[in-house]
Image 1 (cartoon, rainbow, N blue to C red):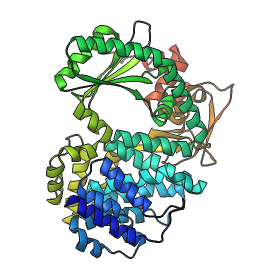
Image 2: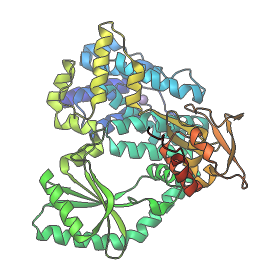
Image 3: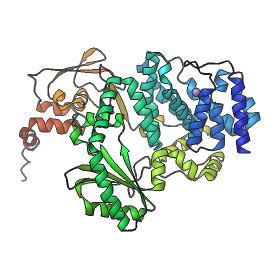
Image 4: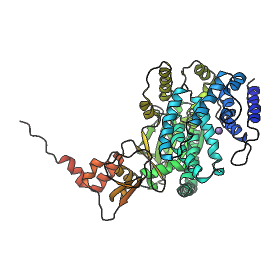
Length: 486
Ligand code: MN
């Protein structure tokens, strides 16, 4: 039955898109078919796959929503309608600076309005992934626009859904268009590091295999390659100092159950010295997106630093495929609970989805919904700031020019003389806004000042400034003498 329904959808979509071409010159149907394939790889349910095949028909062909409802039922029609509306949000907005914040707002409104059926978003993510894979066919200005939007909207969403593999592919492809030079540079750097770590890794692999084997533990071992974009972001945080990035080389150990995870942690620590403060137990305390794993950074006998990630098979699947994986694990139940309009089988950590659902229910009842509060959770209250060259730096909402300067490099932060925001000279007290293009002016003779503490929002910049001011900064807060008691 299932297969026949999908075949029927393919036939109908092929006929509807007949004669249409993509910019690449391929027949248009190649795109919905690729989206279908992606959704199948993610092991999504049948209705979602069918909606993926049909996702562009209502927008671009003679086919109507009623046709789809008659052929495939209410649920598929609802999903196609949601994806169509999500596409429409973005029409007619050409200016990237006003367009991106609006997209996010509208995206949220729509998610709420569509009943917060996350499957709409998953189809949209599959659609975006294929468009990215074929981005080279578009003119450069469109490439940049789609790439930036991906970095700011879709990759964070993939992260929120814990779809790790998707997030990595999306952000790396997008980054290669936003900043091609930097992308190549970092890609080469990672390859170079991996090549030089090959021998060490092989040795460690041997040692770990032997020990775990002798304990009779069943496990899978694999290397993990760091993504270019996440390295780019981490380097910005650590003054471009690659030696401070400890998870460049990482090894994953996948075992059968949670107890074995902790056993393996102990064994790894018996083999190598753990680094203080670098053991993270995301099994006991999962990340906000539901990610679970134990991370530990160790130093080997020949002084090499390596991170181990220890997790169960189910945790691994969830880290790679996120929400899509939980559809697979709970397929029947989850689909059923969606039909009933309630979600019961989502990981407890994906609370924001439940929040969206509740917001949708409130809207249906004609009650008010605080979208700002939702936005806070969805995009983690981040703003994205551009350098004049187009690099993107994400900062917490409330950040000031000095926060941005210190994030670029502490040398830049320490020599700031002024700032241009969107081409205009501005004060160092100006709160940065999402999408601002910020140029930091520096001079070699300028040095860091204690008065800058009041012009700083992030603890990162505060710490850098403290270091630069040296001892003086330590003393200043203590200089107010305590009030004498009488
Ligand atoms: Mn499409």
